[in-house]
Amino acid sequence: MVNVGFRLSCSHSLSLHNLEMPNQKTDNLPTFFVRSVTFDLERLLLVLEDGTGNQLLELSFAPPRAYRVYAESDNWQYLNEFTGCPLVQSADPGCGVELSSNAPYLHEYRANMRAQEPEKTFSCLIRTPDHCVEVICFEQPAVRLL
Image 1 (cartoon, helix red, strand yellow):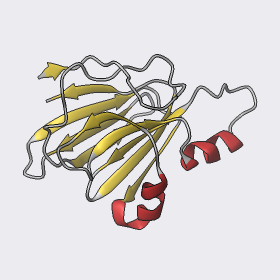
Image 2: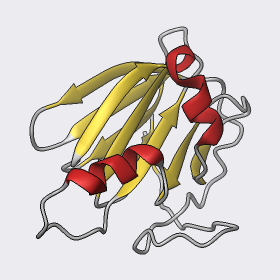
Image 3: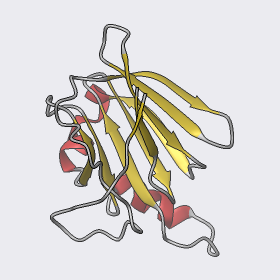
Image 4: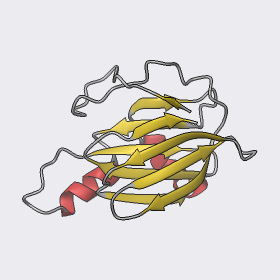
């Protein structure tokens, strides 16, 4: 297992609170798929695999504010409109983990959140050929190469 450090470098301005991007290149990762999504009220844990059962990545969100899982084909129009900064990239352009401070799901969440809750949330989209997971969170996910 390899722990990955992060440093954010976006081409457009995002207020993502000192997020960091990987020091090590991840764009040579193969196409990946969601193997599991586990939520235990303290953290959301996603395991991504290569489609043959080999686990590639683990993403841990502690604690997420909201999340949703959907079939990639059900929301293709939404996905085409999603703009964000890549956190993890794959050699497959249909796969990746992106961060956004301007996602429609995030705007919907912010419109309905408690008045005392700060707007320091952002959206993290995990995009695969089959499924997508979108997480509203205060902190970047911990990402670990497996």
